[in-house]
Length: 66
Image (cartoon, rainbow, N blue to C red; front, side, top):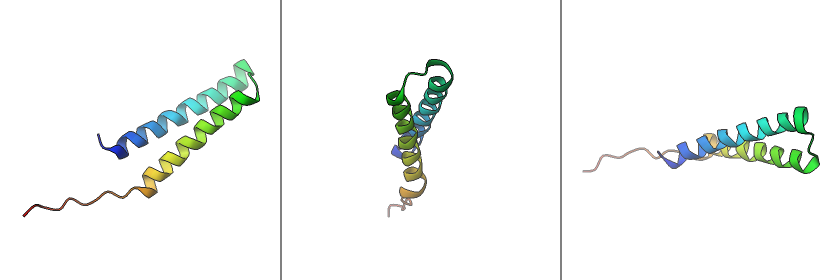
């Protein structure tokens, strides 16, 4: 696996954890402001990593060795 694939996978994992955490906090637990901000920060971090891997990292073309 390349670094780009690992970064994309980790971005999706962060987005899933953040979204599920926000929903559970809102509907079930009602833990408070710190928990909400933590899960929202995970969502923002996941989105930032996903945006960086989509538009920021360019793959280098493979050049044939002569």
